[in-house]
Image (cartoon, rainbow, N blue to C red; front, top):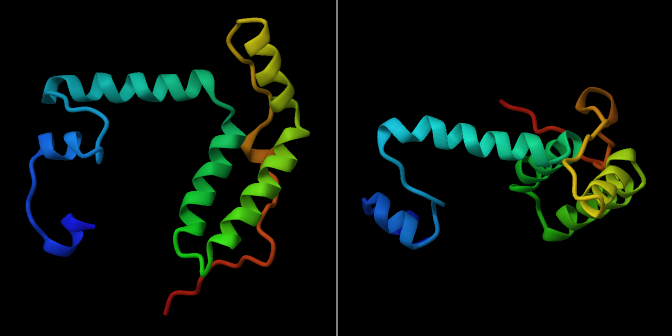
Length: 122
């Protein structure tokens, strides 16, 4: 909040030291580092779970109360826990192998948004 309130310019090193960013890279190393992170996410996470997480972050950033996010998150956890990806995640961990998630973002993202509607822009 200090950075927001003061409008002060701060260095990349300060951003790293204070936890705003996770790493610093020389320009020629930035794209390979970004690709490595993207590869880690793609190889180790369930696409439907990532889609829900993204929706939670964006939709709940302006929620009127934290309980709205808690309810949506709880519905997501309950629904995802009964889907094929949850079983695959546990089995791949126990069998010490990479996961092969089968749930699809195009067809399997559950509706966890009780009474949520997109805001209108005027």
